[in-house]
Structures are given as structure tokens and as C-alpha cells.
Picture (cartoon, protein in one colour):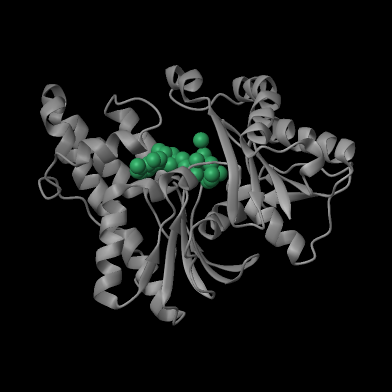
Length: 332
Ligand code: ATP
Ligand code: MG
Ligand code: FE
């Protein structure tokens, strides 16, 4: 089955064509980073308007790159939530219109399940069951994944998301928005031991996270550096990143052990982080586990993962949505 995936939950307009939930025939992402960066974060109203401008060209390009026409699409999958309602509505409404015109079924995809489905776009997906850590701009959670569309939540952040902490710390250092990739690069030149960041494991046996303490520590070190911030930035970035990486790795490995899973995975925008990936691969080797991290293109928001999730939902017998279906900003 050939699925057209559509993603507009935040600040990327995405369309992709995915065959059988595994093979990406095309994936187009139009990012609005440049539009929002002067504001230091995503401005919802601007995001919706940009999605309206971009959705049709992006879908046309995805079809063209796949060498397909509207009539070749078997089903449409669009992100239904969670995310910015105005942004979601653009993609979801477009998908309804496309499905209606093409007379094909449409499924609504939970964006978080989309991130998990990014794992099936690789040549060797994790063996089910596995444990997965989703670390993104709005979420940080560990799941026990027992099927392509079934997972149970083991724990999540009690305050900031990991990506949110990256963005906030970058902003405090005057490095712009979004901050993940900037800190990733800056930290590579720093000494992670120069600043003493504590590791908030909370309950070491459990799977909840907290990143507000690490963020507050970063703020203190930045203030203490004062005028000398520039030369200290790489070290503060490295110390911050090492603390985040240690906690994420510890919890994911521990989850794999508790659930007796041989495979573990890291997904979401933060999964593109080089140091976290390095640490996780090292830990996996030591513990005799297999770790899966999608290539960077499938870590950040994209529509290929939405198309994959939609395929597996349909394969599992999910009901298509009808024209009265609505988007949702958060999971109830
Ligand atoms: P959610 O998926 O929770 O709804 P989102 O869709 O906005 O939120 P993603 O697009 O999955 O989030 O990820 C974006 C986040 O990933 C941002 O916070 C960004 O800073 C972070 N990020 C991107 N690249 C890196 C990197 N190399 N290292 C760390 N963080 C990164
Ligand atoms: Mg984004
Ligand atoms: Fe996302």
C-alpha cells in the first residue's frame, strides 16, 4: 500500500510517500526555522499561515519526487495531534480534502506514534518488543513497544522536555533558536567536566525525568561567567549535554533490562544528538544490547514517519477518520 503522509504539528510542513510503512519513495520538509528564530521560539499564528502557503507545493513535490499521481495513492495519513491546533488544522484539513477527492481512506496519526514509527523506516528495525525513548521539543518519555502500533508509557518528564532544555539553555547563552544542533556542535569543543552539573535521576529504579534542575544549573554557570561567557560557553554546553546524556542513557538501558528487551531505541529531534548517540552505543555494547537510532532526517519532524505510522494503523484495522474528525492539541 502506498501512503501519503502529512505533518504540520509545529513548524515544519511535511509531505511524504511511503510504501508499506517501510520504503520512503519521497519525503519533503519545509522548515520554518528562519521565520521563527527572530522570536526565539515558534509563533503559532505565523506557523499556521506558513503551513497554508506551503502545504500544496510540498505535497505536489512529494508526489513528483515519488513519480506518482494522486490516483496512485492508496490512503492518506495526517498528524491529528498533539501540537499547535492552528498548525495541525492546516495539514489535517488538507488531508481530508485530498482523501475525499481521491476517494481513499484517511487515518489520523498521533505525532508521538509517528516518531516511534520512524524506527521502521530503517533497513533493520528493532525487534519487537523493545523499549524506546522519545526525546523531542515537547516530550521526553520511555515506552515499552509491543507492536508497530501498540506501546505502553513507562515514564516521562515531570517538567521540561529534553529538547526544550537544549533550546532554553541555548537561548540563555545567546546562541539562537532552536538550540539543539548549536549546543551539540559547541559542546564538541568543550570540557564536560569543567562545570559540575548534577544528574537528576530522581528514583533510579523508575522512568520519570526532570530537566529543570540542569537548566537552572546552566543559568547559574552562565551568570557566573558574566563577561567571560564566550570562552566558557563550550564547557558549559559540554557539561550540560553530558548530564542530559547520562540521564537519558541510564534510564533507557535500565528500561531495557527491566523489560528484558534486547533492543532499545532513541527517537525524536534530540536523537540527532551526536554525543547522546555515542554514549548510547557505548552503553549498548557494554550491556550486550542492540541500539537503534534513526538517521537525522527521520529524527526531527517529517511526514515519512507519519506515513509509516498510518500504514501500520490501517494494517492493524484502524478505522479511517471521517470528515467531521477534529485535531487535538494534547493527549487527554
Ligand atoms: P514534539 O515531537 O514533542 O511534539 P517537536 O516536534 O517540536 O516536539 P522535534 O521536531 O521532534 O520536536 O525535535 C525538535 C527538538 O529537537 C528541538 O528542541 C531541538 O533543539 C532538538 N534537537 C534537534 N537537533 C538536536 C541535536 N543535535 N541535539 C540535541 N537536540 C536537538
Ligand atoms: Mg520543529
Ligand atoms: Fe516532533
